Image (cartoon, rainbow, N blue to C red; front, side, top):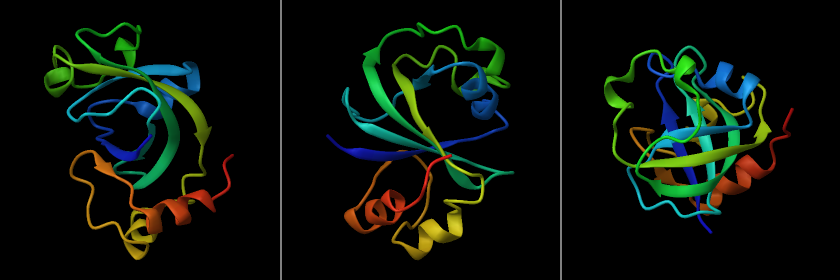
Length: 131
């Protein structure tokens, strides 16, 4: 099992509202994430923080199976992507608990796309309390 951080551009997908109303969402899959992998969702501006811990419950799906269309703000880089995974919510974090600056202080360089979490950074995240 691997742990990943994936970025969410909040101008394209309203992940906060999605997880207020759903316990599972579809996400475009661009890496070889496996079912059972832990996925932390980093929400970009205005949050600039990890807000959610999820688990990949299904991967390499050819189409979206969850009706979360209302949370798609701009689907140009999401709808008809070709490969999706299903993410189930495990934990929510305070908006100020795991900020970008704290992630950088603990070994993260940037969040341009999905990245595997290194042990030093995982230790930091593990010590953050969920909501």
